[in-house]
Length: 284
Length: 284
Image (tube, rainbow over all chains, first blue to last red):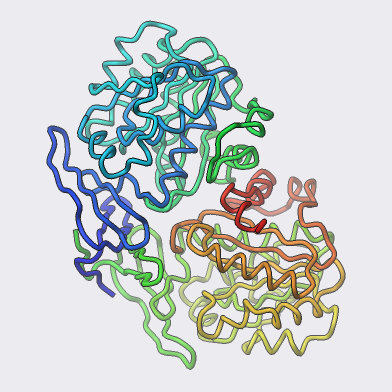
């Protein structure tokens, strides 16, 4: 069966997969300095943002990604006060991060201000923390920001980027991880979106090698469902600066003062379990 | 972007999702007494079987579904000897079940013999156990088979069916679960594919209610990734006849004599963790 103009389709030429959501209309279409941003209304997934034809997020299922990129790393760090977010222009990660009372400062460095402004307009539920006095929104180059950071200035760096092609490729490189390592305090942790365990094992292995070469002593790849991303299965990789990533603040998770839709203590323990094929691949 | 004839697309009218795999050709197309079976060659997922336009399985990712429908229930039962599989005509579940040395007999009751014959031809890797002397392949009505079964004749019943529409709808009903309850020995367990946690929570809740009404004292819904099924996230629900489903044979899992691609002890523990929204929904 074929799809008509009532569907938005993301075609994965490199994966042989295409994923479509049924739409009722396009709400916005804009070519920014960096990329083309489109926003659609869907029949079943709420609003949808795409960049250069790739799905960034839907209202229905972004909670999975945003919770899993934020809470596992923040409940692994012993006392995260200072957080840097690279990318994350839709502000969903920032919003989750600032639910943590320990966090005194969260800097978000997004290259394209239009992503944030359109998110404020079309996805206001993700932007509720933008005016939090602890939040600082910077629009600029995240790689340069980390290079220029003072040594030992952050507890956690969350890399919430697009796929490792084009401008985001540098965010998956050893020099970038070296700069992150320098910018992290002792016990600091990176959390980075790391694509699909089913489709991108080579990328995940290469990332982990680069992180290790950059000085990170412990690595841990989490996995979780994410319907609108290729294969519906996604991952994030944590890299620790002299910290054991399987030690988590169990009781703080149980006692957390905010609600979540996916994350809880059991799901934290679940997301760090390693499927057989994954375990074999990364042990090589 | 639109898709040309080089893609097979499954359109979910009820979900607002469509999923496509790029194909190089169609290998088979047959209208059987029950349904239309098509087999395609894909560029990235090996061979693909569809029934009435819905994806049944791909060579690349069926290991997830087949392992998770078989091993969790078999390592939860204290000593599974006699297994009944309802549906499962592609024989992938049968093949996983017979990896367990404790299993002395596995009966597979599939309504459409052509599914099995085409699987033997196009997916021989799933049919390696069809000639196992412990296997019995029956072609007939699974609901009637269970109704006609002797009381207390099976340790485990695996319901490996299509979606709960059309002929498979009866497999999600309380009368069927009552028959299963009767056909199970004490300590026996059902494992049934139960659709997507993201898309089909109402169905899962209703199933669980019917299972409980039919007499099952403990229920446990597992979740796992399944790229080619709607949302990429799938579930199976266990129902126990006087047995606690969180007690598993840990050491036997660690010591298992066969290889797996996804399942291991950590993944068993992970698959039974309940996301927040899921926990809230089923507690109601």
